[in-house]
Length: 185
Picture: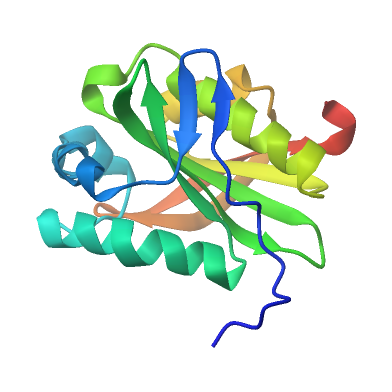
């Protein structure tokens, strides 16, 4: 059982123009399944393969809530112009150290529009300004240039490479670390 005084991120939707970061809902399940079956998504994320409706439904109905209730982070759907466009989350949060990490993916039909960068800026800046975080990180595989470009466009600074720090279906990968601290705002 989770204690009522467990520190947590506020359970709110964040908005910036046509971009909304909101809790995922069951209606998102078909779009999540399509996106998580995408070859590029599967290349960079260690998702179940095959990824099916039961995985997405459990993620939406249990996983996102559990992440929030535990204080480990918060999961948000990326919505653009009223359409589901991807997922973003805060994870691996240390409330004592005031640090957290952002993870994201964008649905194939929404890539190339700068949505990952906009969402990472919105969520990370909110964590730093309004939620008491002192540092937010993004980690991307050295080969995942799209994710790295998004981190830079969101105002995160490249800080170095963690050798063999991640894993994907193809095996171990090095991760580029990007950071933003409150003083960067």
